[in-house]
Image 1 (cartoon, rainbow, N blue to C red):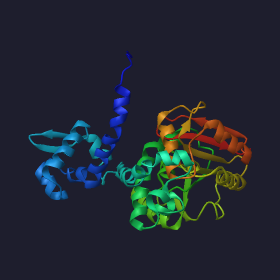
Image 2 (tube, rainbow, N blue to C red):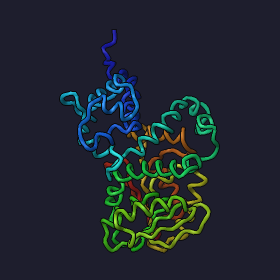
Image 3 (tube, helix red, strand yellow):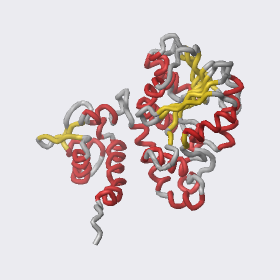
Image 4 (tube, rainbow, N blue to C red):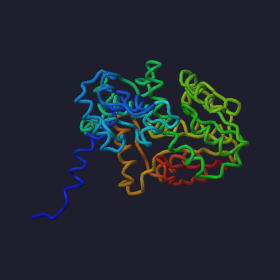
Length: 337
């Protein structure tokens, strides 16, 4: 008789349930409704148009997950929910949660097919061809939700990525595909003399303007519209790519890195923010799961530092250094000699 402990297996069987509890509570706006103070289940049920008993079960499960607390029949946000699950919080992750619920959850339901065929599941799930970005940028609302999700996630990593290397030698950073500008703002915050720019699609830049203006960086961060695959790149002695390379095929990675290298002056550099697999490709777990996420979503995957180094050296970069940041994303700096 085996004496192995089944706890890990049982926890994995149940793990999707806990995620879905969170997703539904956010989708219903529970944490937003509780942002101003405690409320009873019947009050919340009336506000969201839900069955009182069923919603009570969901709320109690959120208490069990330590997202809510319950006192005298009323529910209130725990600090973690007020910070990360309330839409009006500067650190909110609600956009990423809604994206996970409405896109990733159904895509992951087709993981077996993705593994068998080696391709993403957009057409199978949504009847759509093209990339993840084609799908999410179809409407203004969808694009804003997606960008809000990336912004909240970016706030967890960008400051640590910027801190990973000494960037004082550089005068102008251009963040390619910089979305809401979270990395550019983190760089400007740490380096007062640095000037920055965000280079992204025209429709994205309209949203970037709002985020940058809200933080008061509009005088230090230039906003430039363009497609980094098709259009000339702006002048910079430091480019950055945050969660960009893992989206694309090897062919497109080589194209983009070649353009960046050609545009940089001698001594210029490229800062990359990605989750790094270890060299055995068996850890860390979050990077392994993210690589499968890229399988169902895109044409890309997560890679090791040595794999990124090979791409960068092929493009011409002489010095490449990677660092673990302790945040969801790690950092690589490649210098052109």
